[in-house]
Amino acid sequence: MVIVGLMMSAAAFAQTSFEVYVYDQQGGKTNIRNAPNGKVVASLEQNDEYNMVVTECKNNWWRIDGGKVFPFEADEIRLKGSTTGYWIHSSVIGFTGQGEGGVTLYQSPNKKSKVVVRTKNWTMVRPIGVQNGWVKVRVEGTKKEGWMPMNQICANPVTNCC
Image (cartoon, rainbow, N blue to C red; front, side):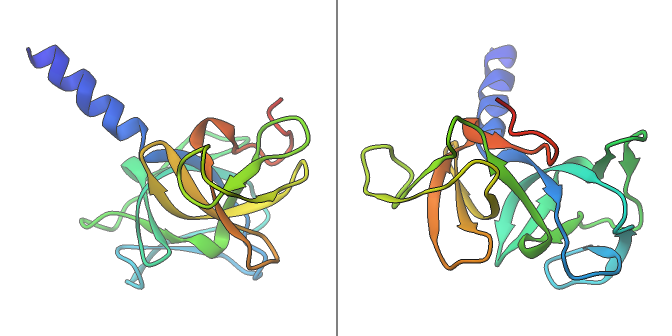
């Protein structure tokens, strides 16, 4: 019974967490805070590349799962300095879509809903919501938004994951 409960909670967790990379075009360091709009508790160097798993979104702020950041060419960084979690803004994280020719974004988290846009390969998107294995995204540099399945996320900035 305990094993079944653990498996069910792991499945629920997997549907709301996903990998992103830091894509901060604002210059300087990328701040990590102890709450949405909270105190800066860590900063990431702009000239390095980082991945992280995010879960839970509040007003365009994403909780960094486990307080861990993964530099591409170094060991994981365990964040310190907060007892309330670690948060990063959606404007400095993103990913591309995995698939030949890009990804289809839907009006709602369902493949039977209306198609909003089809992205080209390597199109950067920023996460703005999550629901049951789907991520709501905004296409970088546009106002276009839509839902994509989590299994099409590519959180590697040097490949399209195909």
